[in-house]
Amino acid sequence: MLKYQVQIKHPYNYFVLFTAICIATIYSTSCDNSRIKPPEHKKINLSDTGSVEQASLVNAKTTGVLRVAISSMTSPRETFTHYNELLNFIEEELGKRVLLVQRKTYKEVNNLLKNNDVDFAFICTGPYVVGFADSAFSPLVKPTREGKNTYQAYLIVHKDSKIKNFSELKGKKFSFTDSLSTTGMYYPQKKLKDLKTNADDFFLKVYYSNAHDNSIELVNRKIVDAATVNSLIYDYQLKFTPEKLINVKIVERSELFGTPPVVISKSIDKETQKGLEDIFYNLHHNKKGQEILKGLLIDRYERANDSDYANIRAMKEYIDSPNTK
Image (cartoon, rainbow, N blue to C red; front, side, top):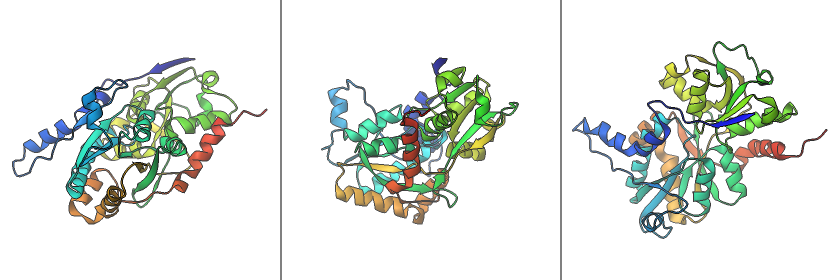
């Protein structure tokens, strides 16, 4: 079986957009002189051999600076402008400078938290289960959307496909997202284990898209036959960019999982933790906060508990358990 790493070539190129979040936000506001331009958030792309300047920017003892990471696959690319607005709001409320530290994969974001290179992060549920077990962070809050604090995996195929369920993907081309993704990796691995097989034996070719948006596009272009994607991202596109789903259909849905949490580093001070809790808990009571949440399709944030992700942890343990004859 062949394996591929995929980077979709389209106007919302992952790398370009992620590094241009703040520039795009400032540009969009410059057309309206009645609005005050929000501050541009400094991006730090930490390499394994980062410079002394980079290291000093994210030093845990830096006074008045709050460092945050946003996992690229927790939301569609189009929502990053709204996350930038949220970071501006946090800056204003806490009176601290916010630095956005970017990483490509879930594992790298987990490492930032474990190494105290960021103070809090928006992550997905798969890396939460792994990182919590590794004592990398603690849960802070989770979003509620349309009155629900759950999401699920969608198995998607092209609209012309005759595939009706996962078992019919034998000998087909499939796209995973990230090795720690609940919906884009753990769920299809569970389905494979249920069938007493594995990806190498079951699929003709496997792709790793690095983003749920990319997996959807791969199905849309018929580059792959199927993919499992995050329902929150699919539903966001269905509401705001339905043209991206015109050639895609859902054929299977997983069980429900707790929504992706905001987590905090174990080293964060209690005062800052309390400040973040107050901001997230009361965001929906603030007029500006309500506009930010609307752009993210979030009703409100509420307390997150480790027990919210128990079924994901059980699924991971099932996947990792030895096969029985």
